[in-house]
Length: 220
Image 1 (tube, rainbow, N blue to C red):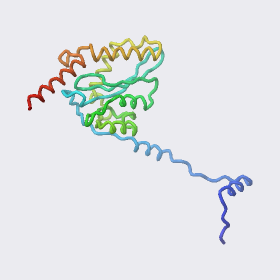
Image 2: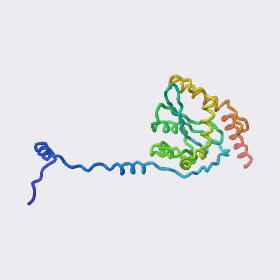
Image 3: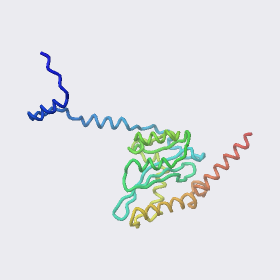
Image 4: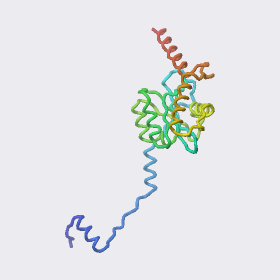
């Protein structure tokens, strides 16, 4: 016997009249987790601790650190040029949302084939961050899981910054942001680095670029 056809509105009226409830299969939480993991991607460690770089704007490292102040926390995202030691981009937020790193990487100019190295944190494995990096023509590299030594240049920067900056005395995030901006300018233009021939990062960058130009001139 063939049942008469009826649209969904009629079915809803009948169900309401007789208090009928459909049995809906619940969403499998494990499938949702697996799908989320598949969206995030990790990348091999292409840097391999080759920290002795001499070409500016060719190899970068990035990470996030937290700054406790006035019973609050701020989170700082930084991108550093390994060859010069220069902080080329940074962003600060009161939360760990994905925009903390995406707004940092967006400050970068197009760096075709430049390497950017990070840990395997969810910010850097996220599809949005990967898309922005690829749009800049950059190549991602990641530390082995749980190995901070693979990203030593940025860890060293955070260590020096926390030793030298009185961030804990700040009473608001606006004050902290101003202090961070001042420190970044000091670090890039004034702070001498023993491992960079006692030059500031900007001095080191200019020196390396001049060396490159001189070397290129000798080849012709």
